[in-house]
Image 1 (spheres, rainbow, N blue to C red):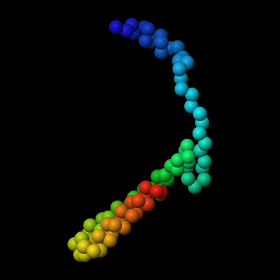
Image 2 (cartoon, helix red, strand yellow):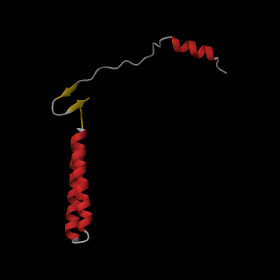
Image 3 (cartoon, one colour):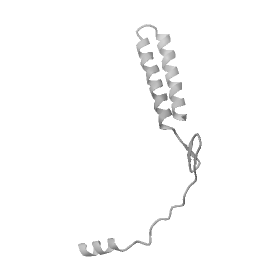
Length: 87
C-alpha cells in the first residue's frame, strides 16, 4: 500500500521527464495549416453541410413526384457531401 504522504511529496517535486514540444509553423492566409495539414474552415463546412441537407430533403420530397428527379437530387447531395469534406 502506498503512503499518501509519499504521493503528496512526489507531486511537489518538478519532474524532469517532461516532454519537450517543438513549435510548428501556423500560417494564417485563406487556410489554417498545421504540420502541413489544411484545417477546414468550420463556417464554410457548416454552410455546405446545410446546403447538402437541403438538397437531400428536396430529394426525399421529390420521391412523391418523380423517382428520376429524386435520384438526381440525391446524387447531387452526395457530390455536395464530397465537396463538404474538402472545404
